[in-house]
Structure formats: C-alpha cells, structure tokens
Length: 321
Image (tube, rainbow, N blue to C red; front, side, top):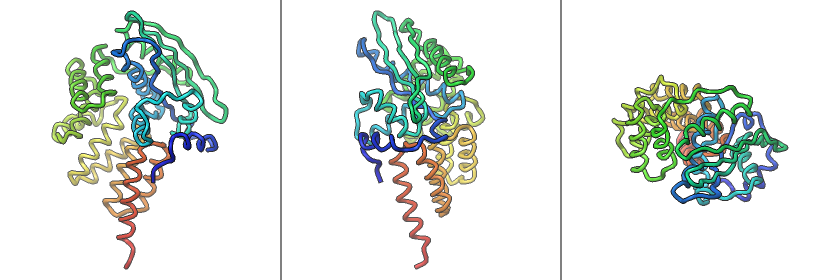
C-alpha cells in the first residue's frame, strides 16, 4: 500500500510522536542554487552527498540523497521540490529524522558561497548551528570538509577522518552519485577509481552500477575485496554483495554479510534484504519483523510493498488447506 501523498504526509507527520529512533537520524536536503550558471547546478546536491557521508562516518544514520530521490519518485514529485523550511521540517520528521540540514549556495565568477543551517526537528524545531562559507569553485572538497567539521561539532560529535582523495577524484565521485544515467555513473565512478585506486566508496558504487547492468562477476570481484574495508558506504557494499550471493544460492554467506552490514550501521537496505532472505526460507514471522524494521526508516516504500505482497503469498501457501 502506497503512503499518502506528500501534502497529506506532511500534515499527518506533525501529529506523530517524536521518537528516540528519529533523534539518531539526519537528513541533508540538497542546497538550493540562488545564483550562478546552469553548469553548477549539481553542486547543491553534491554538497549534500558529501555531508551525508560525513554523518555516516560519525556513527549517525542518514536519510541519504538517494533516499530523498526515491521518496520523491514514489510520491510523483519532481527531483528536487522547492519546499519551504516548515515543509522540510515536517518532511524530515516523516522520513524518520530528528535532525536536518538545509541551505543555499551561489556561484559568481568562480567563487562559491554557501549558507547552511542545521535544525533539530523534535516537538519544537531548534537551530543547532548556522554557517556561511565562501571559497573558490575548485575547492569543493576543502569546503565540504569544513562544513562537515562544523556540522559534526554542532551535533556534539568529534571530528572524523574522511577519505584522503584527490579533489578531481572527489568531484568525479560526487558527479557519479548524482547522475541518473547508468552509463554516466559508470564513467564517473571509473574515473574516480582511476585517479584514486583506494577510493573505496567510488569502488562500491561502481560495483553497484555494474550489478544493475548485469555484470555480476565484475561487481562481485570488487565487492569481495571491500568486505573488511572501512568506508562511509561499507554497509551498502555488504548488502549488494549479499544480494549477489543470495541469487547464487549461497544463503548462509549472504545472511552473514547482511548481519555484518547492520553491525556497521542500521540501514533499511539490509533489513529489506533479510526480509527477502527469510521469505526464501518460508519464515514469515522473521520476514515480517524485518519489514517492520525497514518501515521505521520512512523510505523504500515500493520495495516494502512488494515484499509485503510476497509475504502474503508465502503465508497463504503455508496455511493448511
């Protein structure tokens, strides 16, 4: 069953009690461009991607830019709706987040100016921090790192050590993250890995693109090497590899990878994959439990709906005639 439309959801979520689970999550909305050429429109989403990865490294659970994009698609919205601040607060709560980051940026004569603020979106929204940064357009990595440190300090978190990558590799990786065309994604991620061979996040997303393209052997080879690596999207790499193993019939190996993913970070992708794993074993109660866990994140509704239908069929098959 599809969730209510966005306007209805924003109204409903205002009445939903704020929970400890929400307090642990943060959503970074793509920054709105107020001035600058169309060629720099990607920067607002790019900064959001960089910041939500910092959140992961600090041990917090993000509502990622990809989650937002999927949610907008499920609700038949444009890719980046122009919500008011009040609507963003309500949407953050509806997506299971207790903290949110929003802001804007402008580009003038190769100068990038960013205005950013973080809010706690509990019963009474509270400003946690506000920052205004300006730098050269080519210093996107340095700017992201400064904003990351400011944000984590406001959240009461210590500094984290992000991946040491070349600025060119970082930009290519970010462009790959926000691209929608699979071929472009592969090009950008491949370039990032070529520039920075130990860029594990770029390797992970390249493997994900390859899997979706049906190039399973190439994808599996990359992900096998990343199993014990520490990087922001390690939880997602483990889930993707588990999906491959599951489809190959290596069910116990797949389950171990999914449990490891959840130890790295609580994430809906692992719970959904575990629900699928249990359904293959006809264990409907365990599958239902994992689906309930996935629903807490407020995202991936289409996948949840599909597995709910599968759950009903398996349950019906198990009933005595």
